[in-house]
Image (tube, rainbow, N blue to C red; front, side, top):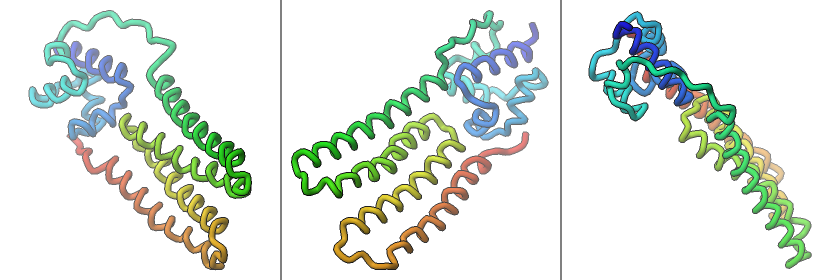
Length: 204
């Protein structure tokens, strides 16, 4: 088997096993997804420095990238995306467990606060997105991070609004204007993740 063909099959195998798209790999090495696609089709080879970067990303040696490919194993049913989904779901459930416990304890210990205790459940909403965002940020999913960042911004404003309107003795009638903060925040989120997605790509 030719060197290009070996590299192509190994690169595609390592990338897929890492649950990484061609675009995500390209971002990490400052190349475009087109360049990665060309290598995986066996139409070219990266230089040695880039090959070393790729090997470091997958925690293998450069020799492993050009070695004769091993027979592929059958993909596990319990795959990585499912594991990540379960981790995110577990973290979110834990947040809500704490929020419900706070609500219940306040109702039992301080019955007079029961009418305000439901705010603990409202506060749990943005906290849920903080936890899930911290996890998805590690996994490098830009679109998912952008969605969670947007939800975090708006639910935080909603939580602040509801807390103030229920806790202040005489909340101002202009309190709704707090949601105007969300407009520039949303624009910043879109610009940030757009920049993050495209600034490190270059056509090779």
